[in-house]
Length: 259
Figure 1: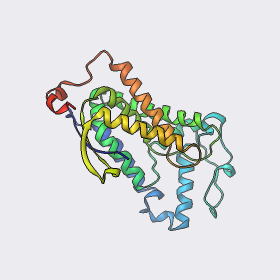
Figure 2: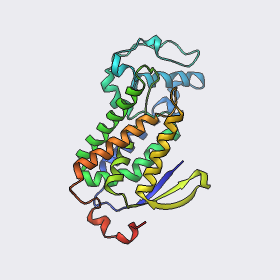
Figure 3: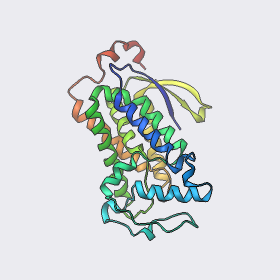
Figure 4: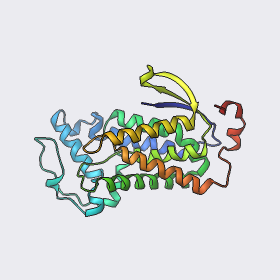
C-alpha cells in the first residue's frame, strides 16, 4: 500500500552492513528453491515440495519457540509431498537463519527495498557493529512477538521483515522530518514526497489494520512487523533521546526537510 523509493537524507560513510545484508539475502535467495532458478530442486510440484522443506529446515516454526521441537509429521506440507525428515536444529538459532530466507521474488525485493531506503541512515547513526546487533535483535524480538501471539502455530515463518521493521521504527525516531519519496498503488503509483513520520506512521497503521483482519492462517506476519517496529522505535528512543534527532549532514539541507 505504500512503497518508499528514495529518502533525501545524506550519509557520511558507506553503509557496509546494510549493503552486506542486502547482498547476503539476495545470494541465499538465488540458490534457494524459492527463486525458481536452481534446477537441482526440480520443477513444478517437486519445486513446491522442496521449498516447503527448505522453509521447515531454515525457517521458524512459532510453536517450537515455546514448546520445543514439533514432530515432522505435524509440520504442514503441500499435498503429495514426501514426509518431512527430522532436522537437528535449535529453535533459537532458527530465528537467525529465518532472517535470511524469503518466500518469493516480491517478498525479497519488497524487504530489500525498505532496507535500502532506510537502513543506510540508521546504520550511519548507530555505527556498523551496533547497527548489525540492533538489526538481529529486532528480528528476534519481532519473531518472538509473533510466536507469542501464535503459540500453537506450525506454519513456518521466514523473511527479514521483522528486523527491517525495527529499522523503520528507529528511522521514525531518528529522522522524523527527512523527506521520503514514495509511490502509492491506490493512487496509480504516483510518486509523492512526504516527511518520514507521515510515511512510516501510515505504514504502521496499515500493518495494524491488516493484522486485525488476518487473525490466523498463513500469509504475511503483520504481528512481527508491528512488534519489530515498536522495538526499533523504543530502542532508538532509549539510546538517542538525549541527542539531536537529525545529524549535522541532514541539518545542512534543513530547507528540504520541512513538511
